[in-house]
Figure 1 (cartoon, rainbow, N blue to C red):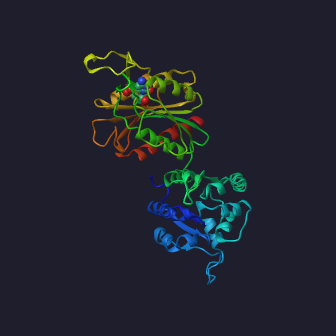
Figure 2: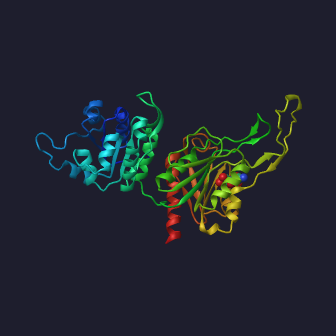
Figure 3: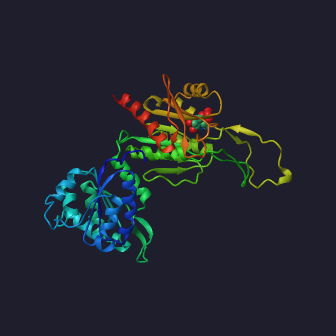
Amino acid sequence: MAKILAGKRIIFGVTGSIAAFKVAGWVSHLAKEEALVSVIMTESAQRFIAPLTFAALSGEKVYGAMFADDMSEPMAHIDLAQAASLLVIAPASAQTIARLAHGMADDLLSTTVLATRAPIIVCPAMNSKMYLHQATQENITKLRNFGYIVVDPDSGMMACKDDGPGRLVEWDSAQEIILRCLSDKPFLGKKILITAGPTREAIDPARFLSNRSSGKMGYALARAAYRGGADVTLVSGPTTLECPYGVERIEVETAEEMYSTVMEKSREASIIIKSAAVSDFRPTEIHTQKVKKDNIKTSLELQANPDILFELGQQADRNDKILVGFAAESANIEKEARKKLTRKNLDFIAVNNIKEEGSGFGVDTNKITLIDAEDTIHLPHTSKEETARLILESVATILKNKTR
Ligand code: C5P
């Protein structure tokens, strides 16, 4: 998660919903990432879960009543509001949403909300009928008009056995929203197109040609681009990975499908990162029925797939865009990458040695070298998450120089 959260003061409002127990895990994650978490609990939240739980997990004081009995902190709401980098309300009950929509200031959480100028994330959790009620929906619209980020709840079976929208969003999604809020956003208002994963080239309905790409690098780039404020489209070959939160994913199978999708989507994008491992060839003939073992030939006739990145480099609007390629090499790494940089007309290329341990296909780490017309930058051997962040830092520098 890099160190985006370290040292950031997050006010965490917990309200009266059965989902209150779930956010104990959220507070624990935030504290482990070294965020400074001040939990404020509404009175009804304290009926669902004890303040001590949050005190133990955050390692910080938990706030409840507006005024402490000993009057030691008469201005707690102002102090908390001013110190905050972010305010998260999860779970947000229908009651709290209604009170916030009307600007109520009758407890510590609602007064802190009014007094802060930090971004506010609201994660509703309630029975689906309550959530879908016009009153709640209108209150949510009001909160969105105030500029609060109201996260759509998940759908599914609720504690009350109703089935529908209203389940507290999962931590994986909430985490992405929090990270985006607290990150620098060099790509705000920019459309970034990223490709990921392998392609599959059918031989017959059962068999195909493919490669070892897991898609992990491209998905990490999509997450990092979303955090950086971008509007992200991810064109993905077959993978087992979940679509990152906030990202539009278009799933494709073959190189030709990837080609037509990328060409269409590239028109709107100002940054294109091609981390997919596209099959260079496809079988000339695709059998409509499974080929019987006895009839299989010992050689397969192949034809070349379009080189998507090369085509992008030749487009008339090439200079309006930033174009980044990837190369997986096993010998003469830098020399081969430099040839591709020039031939494909790229801003830079990210190359890795697939023979090196902990680098490239399938694993969670990578060791990448970034090569542009002038420089060679060796990134450290690190997680794909961190590698993605560093690659996007280079993209952000190019973007800054372009728009200067
Ligand atoms: O030439 P090579 O396949 O090594 O180049 C790799 C780069 O080109 C990657 O960025 C990959 O996504 C892209 N590529 C492509 N279309 C192909 C083959 C590769 O866009 N048919």
